[in-house]
Image (cartoon, rainbow, N blue to C red; front, side, top):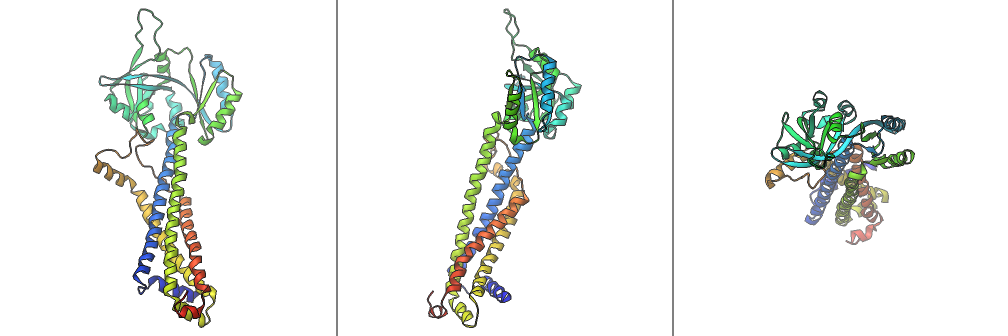
Length: 416
């Protein structure tokens, strides 16, 4: 019986003697499943890409947790805090830095920047900044005390390249009532990076920690302890635990204070857009119900003859369930192919739109990244395909039940 129901279902799928309206609705159902599946895969892949870039790239460059104080100047006090923080099993590493704000100046332009004085060796081991270097790198800060690493956007604004000079003005004024000119140092560009986000590429510079001490004339060997943790999503919880355990004059801030809103917006957008796209799948499934219902009406005579020849209700139901399954597999399969193909070629499509519009579609000034990151996850692909097929089969139960419960005599007379 199973082979018989499969044979009939395949004949109904491949037959061309349906009415024009029935054929149109069947093709519309397949097209709806193809487009909704492909769009769902493409959009969720982009959302996953933004999520991955935030966690692994941007949060791999900036400190996950920053500990600072204006009062502690003793090296011994800082070492005690560092030892306590590193003892936490959730912490990967902790390193000193000197953080300040200043002004970067060249012969062409000026820009307010965040100055980060780092230990180049420590940063190379515990940060992913090196993978974003498009010229030079952190080793230049070791060989040249007055070297500087900056973002590509800032470099373009100042119109400087590797080997050229940039003046960094200190935020602190000298204690001299006669002269209130701020101190500044001339730095040589030894590295240029391109993370792809406006905040980092245009507003941050990295210099040697010793150079930073001299520039801002800090009394302390460092002003910050930068902490990197295993799970960046637990940064707030870990920061709160450290804040409770450390002295009252110590400030503990997680990355969410600066980038938390962007990350939450990405996660919220993913949820909302995903829900809306599943509603699109539901519309496509509704078209499938209408299509099968029309086939049932057209095949009333066949169904009545099958029943009078001893065919069970389950056999009749199987025919239309298998037909719905066939349409679902076809739509989901083609949608999977087109969705993955579109995701893998989204960069080319965005470049084409950029050329047609004459401006970047993804601007750093508006979006957290200036490109569309893609993260195709096998689990998501499997979930989408299973979900589409499951919903389609469930929807096919309605016309299948109608066909199975129909009275053969009424059907032969042209009724339902």
